[in-house]
Length: 249
Length: 245
Image (cartoon, rainbow over all chains, first blue to last red; front, side, top):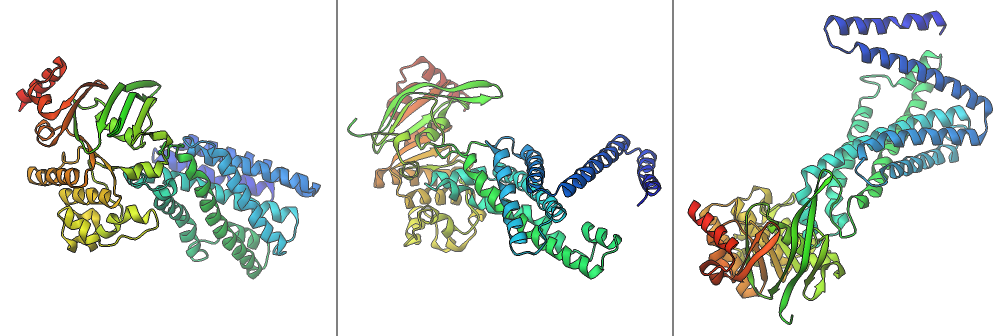
């Protein structure tokens, strides 16, 4: 794709701006900021990836992954401000999910141990885990606010902290996984996944692109489930104090 | 303190309101003998319900000590304390599931199963036919009876009642009153009953406390409390409520 083509692609931004203006949606500023940010961020990432791929050293790859996990954890932790050590628990969750999934991918030689594979796939796993962590914390908070009496009831009958929160935890884990599961059900029918589309546009054989996409679908499914469950079990003890009273939210 | 079930030593509790701390209990000291049916009255927000939740450690006092069966609440195993000191809430909350599932919940939490659930339902005046019904579909009065039956399943020695009849009609309310008095007499359960209904407090209590502004203004045998109040604030409180009836 040459520079002229990129410049022409701004036609779509102008179209969005025109529509926002015509219908007085008041989104003009947001559209411009989003486009400028996306352009700058993606070019920076592009140059960083070029550098990392060129360097091809495990330390640089690990450093890059750590930064990605840190940013993801910081973003998701905003949803759990009230929870003690939320950032570190999310960081640990995403790191464990990354280690497990990459462990299988590289250990079973499903993908070559090359930076472009490790970093691209990690980006998808970490980004997806961040969204799941956001959804989980959001739902957990809403469920606790709604079902506080139920928690107090179980505690008042002599139940443990885990027994009092377990149905709510289960509900929050399930709810946070629904978008992933539902999205995967219609994959290929409603929309072609971005990565697969990218590969096909870049000239790859569609069947080869489908095989790779399938790997990503399965990977994201298991990474999402792992994220919700690990985070759930790391988070719930922090919601209670030592006298087994619900303290958060 | 041979027969003392609960002893409060200079209890203080405040709640956070933004950056401020609002005191709710300001140094309450008292004793409750085993088997007593204590009624607790007082204006809204005076700290009555807070006393209840401190006794089974659903909340912790900021200062002072609470002894249940001669042991400070924070030295109990929390789960054992909460089984010993049961609580029935105003809204009689139920978990999702049938009456049987809700009734047997205290034992399920310990990994045990409930034998003869019908006996408990009959004791609290509910038909055994209700066992398979969804608990959340029961009427207010039925839920409150089921809630009390649940504390019986736990074999609690102390029962905390937080405005348990305030959402019920007169007939259902009277039924619950009779049931609570039976539990108190037949099973020697010590009862702390927070109520806003003065006539109820007078009808059912062995002993009555007036809590006002986070303080125990007066605690006396119920008959004496209502016929010969000693403290001016008690007289004012009773007169005010009686004149508004």
